Structure formats: C-alpha cells, structure tokens
Image (cartoon, rainbow, N blue to C red; front, side, top):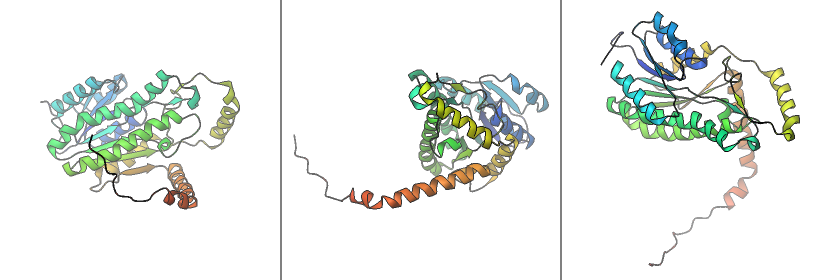
Length: 288
C-alpha cells in the first residue's frame, strides 16, 4: 500500500475527472488537502494537477462502461491510498436527439455510460465502504432528471434510472454507515453540450429544433464549474447530507415548478386514482 499526505486527509475517487465538473471537483479536493484518484478515459489533462500536488493525485485511465475495468481501478485505488472516503460518480455524456430518432446502438450507449457506468462504480466501491463502516457516494445527476425535455429524452432516461437506483442504494447502504447523495446540477460552462453526440435528424422535427434553438439562445445562462465544486465541498463536509441537492437558482426554480404542476395534476385526478384501488383478501390459489 502506498500513501501520501496527511493521515486525516480524505480520499476521493472521481470519475470523469479530467474535464468539466469532474476537473473542478478534483481541483477543489486537492486544494482542501485531500487525496484524489482521478479516473477518466484520457487522464493526460490531469498531468498539471499531478505536478502541483505530488503524491496526492493518482490518475487512472478508465472507461466506466467496462465493468471489469471499474472493479480493477477501484481495487488499485484502495491499494494505493488505503481507503476511499468520497466517491463521485461524475462520468457522463449527452446524446441529443428526439426519442424517435435514436438507433438501438445510440440508446444503449447513452444508458451504458450515464447509468450502467455509475452502477458499476457503485457496486465496486460498496464492499470497501461497508468494510470500513463509512463513506459518501455522490451521484452526479442533472436537471434532466427532474423531467423530460425535447431532444434530451434518452439523457433524461439515463438520469432517471440513476436516481431510482441511487434512492434504493441510499436505503440499503445507510445501515453500514455509508451515505448517498444525488446532486442535480443546472447549467455550467463545461463541454457537455459542445461535445454532445447527436442523432440523425428527422425533418419532421425541424420546426421544433428551431424553436428550441431560439429558447436556448435567449435563456441559457450557465455558471462556473467552480461554484458547483464549492457546493459539493460543503455537501461532503456535512454530518447529515441530504439525499438530493439542487445546484443553481434555475434548477431550484424548475424543480419547484415541476413539483407544483405534478401535485396539481394528481389533485385534479384524485377521484380517478382512488377509485382504482379497493382492498380485497388475497385470492385463494387451488393446489395443482
């Protein structure tokens, strides 16, 4: 086992650590005196951080869609630093396109990266966190998990799946002293959108695309990733972290608006909903 840094410094594992929010999380953790395992498909952008923080950043190449590779990297991380305290499931990408346009390969690729990648990391780290009786798993979700929006349907599907899995995981892991938080960021100046992959456009949706482009041009105001990192640092310092944390005023307002509209709809259809249930004894099954 190789260790470096203060005996009390925390050890992070951050996926997608080389760019965007992952890079900001890595910089913030190192600035706090912690040690970081930064995992990414290309770790060369982390070379400057490794040089500035000798012995405290271990950069490991990782494709999170490769389950065996995930387990191997987690084992190497624990062997190197002796433990894991904070795991940030940040690796992800956006496949943009209308639901009808997605090929099977494109749909599976979106879920493989954003959902299954996070699942494999969660499965790989849990035995270590359980054994030490502590740890905090931070699942980076999205405003896209608050509701479905045109052209991001499969992205939203991947984040909805991540959140459903993470809610269950939080309940399962709590008895072992392991915390789970779902972080829902709004817009940040990263390359999530500029590096997004797009489906082959169906001309039937041209008018909708033009409308969306106007809306984004008029109302898109993003923030510095540093601000998201500062919020996450406060989150992991809390003795009682929430299951969910919204990041940004825009996503905060959207969350409340969506929740309000859902509650209004549920209330309007309450009579129909309640009429669909009537408790009866369990059916008697005749022996075969």
